Length: 350
Image 1: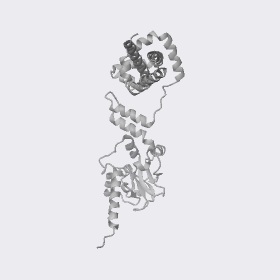
Image 2: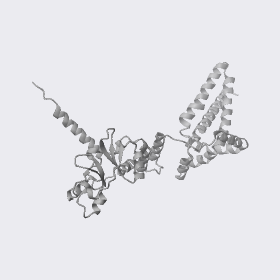
Image 3: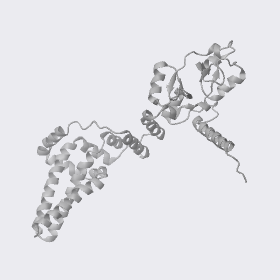
Image 4: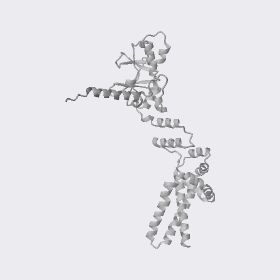
């Protein structure tokens, strides 16, 4: 055999090794549900590869056999064409590493859908011709692998998956749905203090307050539907909850004390939002008074606050004066700190 023929045979064998290894790696990273969805959207490669994915263990057996044959031929060709045995071993190892591992993992694995789809006729016929051997061998591989359909993803991986779905032209995941998925996955890591209405922005009423038109207007303007009630104005001795629905339904009451509910629930600011949500569902009370380590009142949390965190948007109605009360509270605190700093700053003497 001439040198040119040997070189052509060597290149062909290396390409076979590369394709076999890459398709094996890539085929087992594909998700059959994603393939099915792409096929339904008219992706021809996905339609073909979906059929291969269903018999991937038999396909694996075919590719493993041809990979072994091609690798053996590469080694034999190099040993026969080189006088130095050590050099032949080094060259064989280098070529197999590049064409059997690096290129398949770096390139072919990522483009397995188009590559396997383009090679579908060849792969399909190879499976038919070798089925007496590769079909039982594929069953053995499947038994060894066990149930590989149960795949677990981390939260970060799930977020990346849905980000990819959102960016894909064929995706049926809307931007709002992807945003909500992100919020739900991060829900368990959020603390009450992250989403509560801060104390300086919380609307509090006194049990002795008169239900005057001015107070009713203030309650409506706050945008909330329930308000913590204190014993006396200026203090934080909570004695109950005032519901806006009770205010609008009553016609005889003249003070908050007459229609307020006596129930009041507390929660620590470091508790999780999951804890708060379970508390709301269990007690059917949709407002918590939030305290810190010193049992100081630091804010309130409502069911609306949790819903806003899940959907990723502020629930703003016609009565809300501000879109983001936490941002307003932070701005006011910063302004007060600057004012305090200016008032305490000593004048310079000349």
